[in-house]
Length: 287
Image (tube, rainbow, N blue to C red; front, top):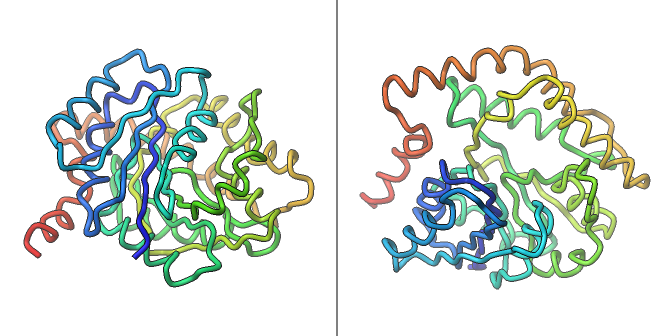
C-alpha cells in the first residue's frame, strides 16, 4: 500500500486546526505523516498544534514554519516539498477528512499507476442538509469541474498528488504574486499541460466549512473571478462549462442561511466539526 502524507497550510486557524488534526489521524489507515505548515500566524494556531503533538505523541504530526514569505502558495509549496510520502495529500486547516480518506487515496493511486492527481466531493459540516449537499457537490464536480474537454480539475480542499508528479511541476507552478488565481486550478493545469492523468473519485470525501458564503458579494465575486484569471494565465487550456455559475446561483440563499445556522449551532453548543464523522469514527473503534 502506498503511504500518504497530508499537508495542511495554516495561517490564523486556531478555531478549527485541532479538529482538523483529530480527523486527519483518526483514519482506517494511518497517514504516513501529517504536516502543518504555519505561515506567520498571530493567534494560537502554533500553540494548539504543539499541544496536540504533546497530547498525541503516537500521532505522526509534524509542525513546520514557513516564515520567509506570507501567502498560501509558498506555504503550500514548502509543505509539499518537505513531505516524504509516496502520495501528497493537500487540505485546508478547516477541513475534516472522512475516516477512510487515507485508505481511499492510497487505493486510488495504487490501482492506477498512471494517476498523478486525485480529487473528490465535499460536504459542508457547518450547514444543514449534508446528504443533499454532498450529492449536489458530487454532481457539480463530475459535470463542470473540468478542463480541456473532460479532464479533471483538482480541488484544493480535497486533493492528492503523486510525489513524482509534484516534483515534476513544483518549479513551474505559478507564484501568483498578485493573488488573483485559484492555486489548485493552477496546479491542475500544470499537470494537464504535462499530459498527466487526474482522476475523480466519488468516495474520496472531505468535509469543509461553508464560511466562504459568509462574505460580501463583492468579496465573493472577486473569489469567483479567480477561475477566469487562472485560465487566462494558461491560454492553452479551456473550459466547456463554468462551475462558478452554479455557485453564483447558490450564493444568495446560502448567504442568508449560513449565519442563522451558526446561531442554531451556538445555542445548542454544537461543534459541527466534531460531529461530522462521529458515526464513522465510532465504527473504527468497534472494528
